[in-house]
Amino acid sequence: MTLESRLDDWSRGWRGPLFAALVALIAGLPGLFAMPPLDRDESRFAQATAQMLETDDLVVIKFQDQPRFKKPVGIHWLQAASVTAFSAVEDRGVWAYRIPSLLGAMLAAAACAWGASALLGPKTGLLAGGMLGATILLSTEAFIAKTDAALCGFTTLAMAAVARIYAAHLAGQPTGTGFNRWTKLAFWVGLAMGVLIKGPVGLMVVALSVAALWIWDRKAPWLKDLGWGWGLTLAAAIVLPWAMMITVATDGTFWSTAVGSDLAPKLAGGQESHGAPFGAYALGAFLLVFPATLLLPSGVTLGWTGRREAGVRFALCWLVPTWLVFEILPTKLAHYTLPALPALAMLMAAALRAPLGRISRLVGAVLSALAGLVFAAGAIYLQVEYGDPGDWPATILTALLFLASGVVGAVLLMRGTAAIALVTAGALGIAAHAALVGLLVPRLEPLLLSPRLEKALERADLAPRGGAPGPVAVTGYSEPSMIFLLGTTTELTDPVGAARAVAQGRPAVVEGRQEKAFRAALAALGQAARPAGVVDGFDYSDGDKERLTLYRGAPVRADDEADGEADGETGEQTAETQAEARP
Image 1 (cartoon, helix red, strand yellow):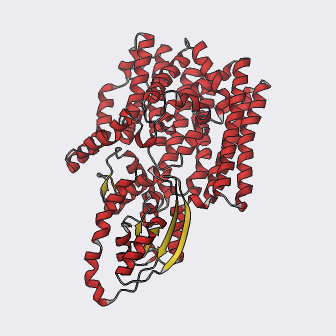
Image 2: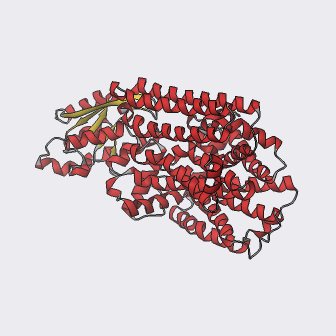
Image 3: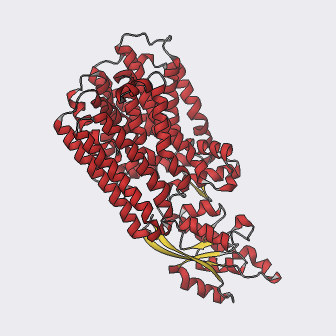
């Protein structure tokens, strides 16, 4: 049986979306369990969710004692449900917080296949969903416990529903009250959940796409058949309850902070040093869609030559306005483009329906080989900078798989077997990504400061979760992954606060640059330093080398207990200062 006939079989009915979801599952699953908690956003989201479960407050979002008024509550509710179902908040297993992201990636791939099949055919839909699920961008976001993969999933679901309603209108099929109500339900649920997860981003993508399609066609009669009456009611029922509760609970502070301190700075300038010029996303697209890079030139070409075709037109109206908005925004992060990636996958898959042009094949082959080389070089760089000799086998395997994905795909493409080239490059690319996140990165100990610190405390019998006196006082290091692993009560303080913690019998962690001041404060309290371990490494969030020394708490005398409350005040006063010092 040929590959073409297998694709025909796999794409029939619901097989196509299910197969695409399976690709996304395989691509994202290795990192779910192997990767430690990441700084900073993932650990901030996970810690905020953990505190919701600890306090039974599912309305107000906090990171320790600080409000976290940046994004709506949707992802936290999904994470809380996942942790409740599969783990426990006391376990601090970040994998449970990542499950909604993995499911979001699977939903995005399945929805892409479902929507594309209505306009471009089932086989093209299957290829589009499979390509999306395998992309380095989505498969990476699939194991990071934050909003982006889930947002992509629900936004793609809404757009897929629009695609099917649009296709039905073009085919002259009735789409009124008798039309498949599940399709309309998918649209409104996808739209509402997108708002509940990341505010206006998903709504913006859908609105821009529909407006562009309306302008292009000069009419949009299908819009009246979206089920506006019950649909808006359903969307309001999903979004408004929490919106009203958070408004009352914070006296409206959530909205002013979310807009004024988070959204507005991203619109006005490159927030947190993430600025980049217009066109940066376009230049990096060949990396974002890897291992499907070899079809990128053909997809872009089809966007022009096939623009009169309904499916291509729909993909363009989805892709171009959304991509332009992200290019115009001064704040640029790679994952911002995720909601536009399904449309690009549709164009690349549609290009396979006809023989590819010679120039498109040549450019695609070059870009594919270049992308494989870039990722292979990245793996080797990580090994040279942060690995030890025992990590070389994992590094070599990872680099070879990335090279093979890029180069073998390029060679097969130039031989004219585009579908085989795509499947081969995709399989090797998924294996390369699995080797990177499942084997190589978790072995690079200098980058794993917080997990190693947690283990060092456990080995020294100083971990509060193991029964040692707590909380741990930390000065000079305040990454969210540490808070997540050590617990909500972890005290971020200054050298004097750390010294007082030791005097109270609690463990302290002191970063090297704070060591002199800590020892001076300890001497002033009449205490001697009692080191219990050292963790050296590299803080990839701020680019600093760190040396964290663990200190045992001094035995507490009976006459010292009365001073306990006063001794803890310094930590409370300085924790907020240190937290705000880090972006």
